[in-house]
Every structure is written in C-alpha cells, then in structure tokens.
Picture 1 (cartoon, one colour):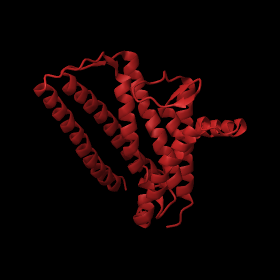
Picture 2: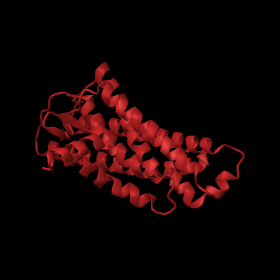
Picture 3: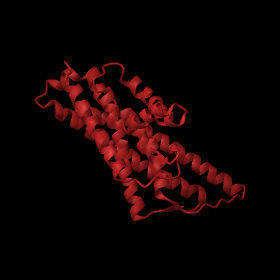
Picture 4: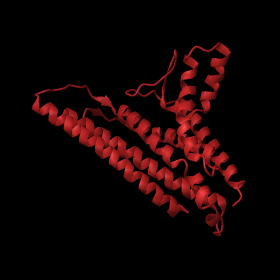
Length: 250
C-alpha cells in the first residue's frame, strides 16, 4: 500500500515541481526586464521566516492534495489492502509517512526556490539566516502536518466525497479564522475564538491584540501554546483517522 501512495505522491511532486519552475521563469523574466531598463531595486535583508511562511502556505496547499490519501485507498484499493497479512494501523502509518515525507520535500523545495527567486530578482541573497530563524522555519513544518492530519480525519472514511471535503475545507477554515473580526456579538465571537483552537490555519497566522490577522512577510514568535496546539491537532487528527479507518467494512 505504501508503494501505491509513493506513486501518487511522486506524481503530485512532479506537478508541484512544474509550478515552482514556472515561478523561477517568472523571476528570470523580471530580472532580465530590470537589467534592460536599468531599473534597480533595493531591499533590506529579511529574516528567513518570511520566505518560510510563504513556503508553508504553498506547501499547505500541496498537503491538501495528499490529505485524501486514505480516502483514495478506501475508494479503490481497500479490499486489496485488507487482504494483506499486516495490521490496519500499519497501512495507515505507511501511507502517512510517505505523505509527510513528500510534504517535507515540497516545503523545503519552496524555501530554496523562494530564496533563489529573491536572489535572481535583486542580484544578491537578501535573506538573513540565523539559528533562531532556522529553528522557527523547521517548526513551521509541524503546523503543515497539523493541517494535513485534520483533513485526514475529515476524509479518511469517505469513498466519494473526499476531494470535495478537502476543497471546501479551505473556505470554511478561512471563514472561521476571520469570524471573530466580522462583527458578531461578543458571545458568538468567543465561540469562534474557541473553535479556532482546532483550526489548523490559525497556526499559520500572526495574532495581534485586535484579533487574528495574516501577514505573509512576518512570522510570530511561536511559543509553547502554539506548539501544544499543533501537537494536539496532530494527535487528534491521527486518532480520528485511525478510528474511522478501523470502522470501515471492505
């Protein structure tokens, strides 16, 4: 079963690589345009977290595609999978490990390409890499995995609607994220704030005193609460996915 998912993840990475290649070509075109028009831009060195944040957003979209992997097997390969002399949980873990490895590759590639694009456009690498920034960049992967696990929990028992659920998840989660600042009465706002503790997109935002806002160029300093929140989402998503998988009938 892991090999089936390996083929699926490899295909997804191939499409993802074409997208990154397109972005590189756009950066090269911008660089050529600036050279011919004697146009020079100056930018101060930015922390690597800014690039990592954008890379995380892109990799989260990629994770959405792979987060239907268990449903993919339910729809077409469940009978074959369960006739093999291995535990059902092992099949889940093998599938998820392949997906997580592909997500990590997608995230790392997006960071490298992002730095390369900025270097191409500005003629130098305007990125400041520090030990703290590198650590935060690595932690960002945990939040992407949390998003992946939540979608796995929502789709693992589906035979036909998994892709629809994964697609609808984005606008629903974004609405929940924005709801506290829309203008609802205070009790309803509080409910949305509590619900957002289970919203994986809330981990990819910057929290301010006035509410929750997104800023694609700055990262908040991730503290213990955010890490615990991500860990809880991963554990909860995994538990629900396993429970729904075990209850399936081939």
